[in-house]
Image 1 (cartoon, rainbow, N blue to C red):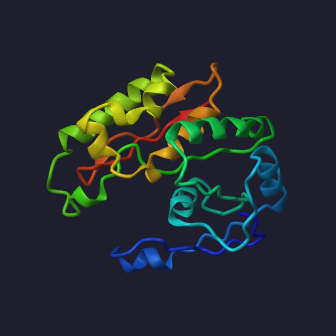
Image 2: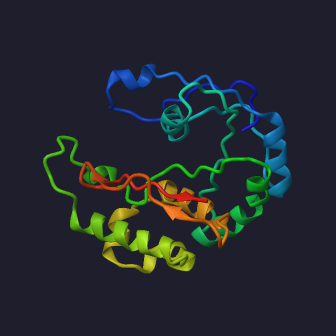
Length: 201
């Protein structure tokens, strides 16, 4: 994403009207976009997209003044989890250049089974897979997380589509062995959405 002034994108439906009024006027960074383009051969620059809810909903809490430049990296749906992880390794130099790499998604994200009345306890499969992922992160066992599809029914229910899960692999791919791992937030919301956040470094 190479916009100097990214637009806000409301890429969801059926939620309260207030969400469609949210603004997050962060600037983009053409220079950073070009740098990412250099690190990822075959990638292209796109100035037509903007900040979707996976970005602005998180950054609005982290940087409420919108005073940091932001670019997004689109995920190629045709790549495997392993290919995404290997691709992301090329982004590691950005950490030394002062760039925050943020993978925004959910380890457990089954919106079809979400209880929006919030009357149902967390589903056991959601808690199970969230715990499996937590331990694998602590063990620096990235292969287990890349090959999540072989982890059984809990994994299949927790990751019905990979788009919310793959961002975790991008952050793990740039992890240093000396990084401290912490979980600033934990828990299952709406019975089937993990709110676990992972901080590396």
